[in-house]
Length: 280
Image 1: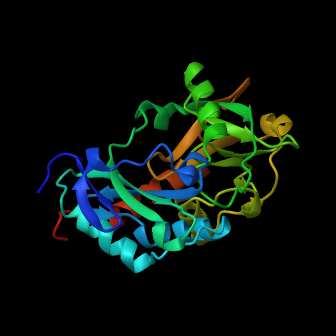
Image 2: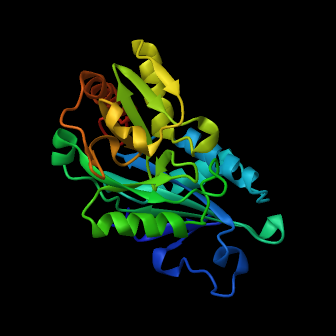
C-alpha cells in the first residue's frame, strides 16, 4: 500500500501520478470542455461520494459532455485508488475531460493534499474580497476556471481567504471554491439555487437547518446590503463552515449562535461519516 499520493486512476487503470498527462494539442482540454469534483477521504472512506459522483454527471450533462461512465464505475475506481493509499486525510479529484466522441472521453481520479484553513479562522472569521465575475454556466462545475483563478489570485494578493463573485447586477453569488451565506436575525439567506453551483456541503447545511428549525430564505444578496446583516459564512468540502470576519470594508465583529450551532452540527455529521478506523 502506498504511503504517499503518487498513484492515480486513468480510465480504470492504476498508473503513477507522474504519467497522468494530456497532450497540449487536446482542444477539449484547452477550451475547458470538462468537469470535475473533489471528494474528501477520511480514514479510507470517501465522504458523500455518491453525491459527488451524481453532481459530476449532472455537470457533464449541463455542458452536453458525452461519455461512457456511470456512478457505479466512478465508485469502483475511486475505491480501487483509495485502497492504495494509507494517508488518513486527503482529497480525490475526479476529472472528466470531454472529446469529440463519447468513447474517447477520459476520467481521471487524482489524490491530492488539500490546503486546510488556519484553525484561528474558525474562531475569528476569515477576511474575503469581492470580485466582478459571473460564471457562464453556474450549475456546472467545469474546467473553465480562468475567472475564478484570477479572482482567487487577487484574494491571495490581499491576504484574504476567498473572493466572492459579484454578478452583473451587483449581487454576490458564491466564492471561487465556496458557497456563500449571510445571517439576519437568526435567518439564513443564500443566493437562489439556479444562480450558483449547489455545493454538497451547502446541501447538508441546509438539511441541518431544516431539521433544527432554522429559517432559510433564497434571495439575491446585493453588495450594497452587506452592512445590514448580522454575519456571513462560507461552506466547502475542505473548509467546512467558515465564518466571515470581513468583506471588503464591511466587518462582522461576532459569530452568532446560529452559525456556531451549524458549525457544531456539521462537524458532528462529518464525524458520523468517518469510520474510527479503516476497517469500520
